[in-house]
Amino acid sequence: MAEFTMPSLGADMDEGLLQEWLVAPGDQVRKGDVVAVVETDKAAIEVECFESGTVGRLLVPAGTRVPVGTPLALIEAGAAAGARAGSRAPAAAPHERPEPRREPAREAPRAREREPAGRPVRTAAGPAQPQPPPPTPSPTPTPTEATAALGAGPLVRHLAELRGVDLTTLHGTGAGGRVTRADVEHAPSPHVSRVRSTPYARRLAHDLDVDLTEVRGTGDGGAVRAADVRAHAGKAAGEGERERPRNGARRTAAAVPAADRPEQRTDAMRRAIAELMSRSKREIPHYYLSTTIDLTAAVDWLRRVNRGRPPAGRLVPAALLLRAAALAAREVPSLNGHWRDDGFAAASEVNLGIAVSLRQGGLLAPVIHDADTLPPDALMNRLKDLVERTRRGRLRGSETSGATLTVTSLGDQGVESVYGVIHPPQVALVGFGAVVERPWAAGGMLGVRPVVTATLAADHRATDGAVGARYLTAVDRLLRRPEEL
Amino acid sequence: MSTVKPLTDAEATAVIKESITRIVPDADFSLVRPDDRFRDVLELDSLDFLSLVELLSERTGVRIDEEDYPELTTLADATRFLVGRSMGAAGSAP
Image (tube, rainbow over all chains, first blue to last red; front, side):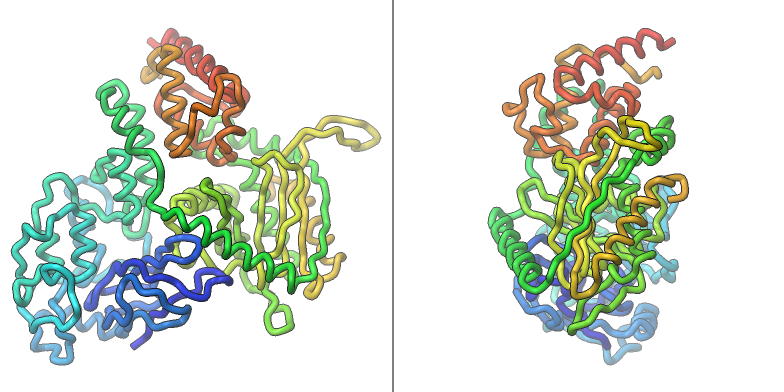
């Protein structure tokens, strides 16, 4: 039995608001599944669980604010979960909690639904789940759990919401007429299809007037993600323009603000940033270095690579800059890690925090884990996806923590250099300015070349200037040989 | 490409504005004059701009290479570019 606790979603988080449970007792979960939505000062985050097994008791109801580390739910061990999933008669599991049985695996039923459409079932998310027995809503003792209207648990309500099923129209087959998951899944849903998707993707689909059944999912288990909906919306809009021009007005109207975010979040975020940055400047003796890097080779390389690629496959210079920043961090490990308990602890992986400015103001620094292992194309895809989800407020918990070095790039704002403030407990921050054309002397000749100013803010407790210099030199060298990146 | 149909100025401008709105949902076009650099006014970063190129080429069928990016600086330029390219592409289509 493991406890699922309120995670720390960033070094500056003390407490979080459990906004929504996406699972209910009895649900099977796998490591990495999103089980809840937690609201921090900065954003609503989709939180994954770190255990596989069966959800036991939910210890904290939705809508509760609790400190980091507070147990939120119990996860029963995976083996027990497997046995339980296989047992069909309630009598075979006398220890079972008084919960109506629910369909064990989350992917499989939907995978089946997708098959008729002739689409391959994606199992990239992990090992294939054993095929579960067909849903058997069997009578069980009345649940003791406090339940909402109609006795439907949060998962069932969530599912109903996702599928557009009106719970009041269902005949519950669970104990005391309680509506079970199977009831919802078997309910006719005239306008909404049974497609696995993230909550945000569904909302977005609604906003953009996209039919989710037509979208190819690229998320876990073929789940439709917001990016997929957007990609599809872009395509459909192009095609639909001629067929249904009247639709345009509706789309435009619906696509207006992504304002499912409360106004006050901006203030809360401002305070969180103020707190963290003040702490940084109070505790960290920063030193700063800067160098201007000739990007002729990198820009030429990008042009060659992008030529002939459709826009969706093109790279932007930021992808190369991040790649170089990550590789250089591997070369100079004493800038990559954390300052803890009066000492530096080097990290074994390079997890780049990426400073992303939000349109409504404020800043988040989501994390690309193991960035040094990703070639430029993969890094570009991660970057696009991460930035989009950051701005749409659909980050995953694992993407909010674990950064070992942060990169900020203000080039798009038109400035040439940025001297950052380190995010504690990290010990350095890399900054890139705009790629600009400047006079450049090389080999005794003056020419015009694309250049970028790379800066480093580093913690003088952890390193000295010579180490920082080594880092920027490495970035320079890497960017001059883009074909090796 | 046979998917390209000739655009009028009004159609091209509409496609551009709609595409930008996809990326910046609360884009306020009353702030953007035809000859303003819309990337600056609406704060599109390089990833946003790439998304815009993606949307424009998907929705109009017009091929947009990196060399064409400077044509997409202002609403007036971008409109002229899309109209011109859509005419050319449609004219040369079988």
